[in-house]
Length: 86
Image (cartoon, rainbow, N blue to C red; front, side):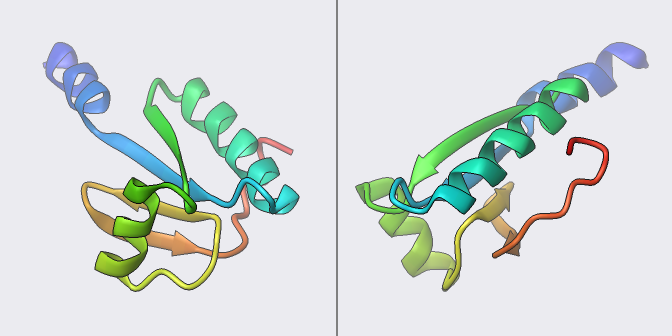
């Protein structure tokens, strides 16, 4: 049972969409990566200026970065609050 939970965590990827010219979105991505690492979650940073990032922006109607995407769904956009990471 515990193995199944661990496997589900590994397969579930969190994508954080950032702008490489926006220091606050890059800082939020660093914090989110640390938060995810502590929980054993997989996270990937994607630039809003790259084709993959542009695709997410168009598909999900993203207007602010950082944006958090889980399983193809937009979870959050704009400021991210992770108090236990700060």
